[in-house]
Amino acid sequence: MPNRAHGLRATALALLVAIAGTTAIVAPVAATDPVPVESPAPSPSPIPDPSATPSGSPSPSVESAAPSPSQEPSVSADPSAPVDPSASPDPSASVDPSATPTPGPSASLTATVAAPAPVIVPNLGLRVVRIALAQRGDQYRAGYQGPSYFDCSGLVRYSYRKAGVSAKLGGGSSARGMLYWGRLHGLTSPRNPRVGDVAIYGNGSHAAIWIGSGRVVHALNPRLDIRVTTLRATTTPFTTFIHTRIPRG
Image: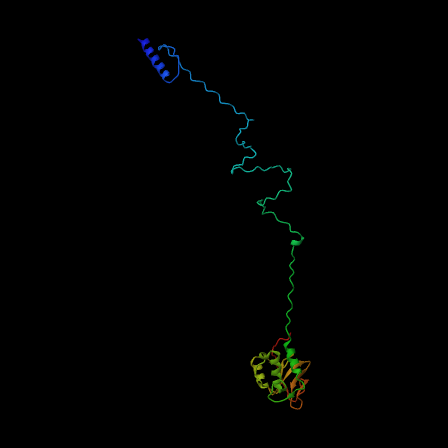
């Protein structure tokens, strides 16, 4: 019975081979002793020849391969390595902030500060005197304050006004008013006059300007006009000085 079954299997197999167009000789195989079918040994993969270059695109060399972004270019740490003088300096080279540059001779600056010019205070007292002396030869005329005719207080007021120190002498346009003003401000004294101070006679009846060295300039009368005399040359007695405290340099 087993031989019959085996024969049927062989016939079916032959029929399949015939249908496929292939002639095969099937040897009878005992069903009780199956023959193990060995799997075909895998063919060894060919070992590529490193010297062989395929006909396609050339294989990239290690030197021409672009480095990955994460790779840093290698820098030689050998200080004795020669430096290429034609190489451009690296603009990103870091600068040591602690290093102190040594300035050249042209970097040192010497600040020259000019000494302040001395302040020259004009001698306004002397200016008053010069203005009054310039009026010598002009005529005396009562009630006039210049520029060509003067009385005693008019000559004093004109000289102070033209010298720019009219505010230093109060009392209006009369010798008596000047005396009262001087006494009110504590500026009167018969001693230690300074050039430009006012000399008062007869308790305010006459006024002159002290020019120093014991002399005064004043408008005397219509006969004598404007003259320089000593302090006590007049018949009217001297009373006091008005120290006007104008700048005298």
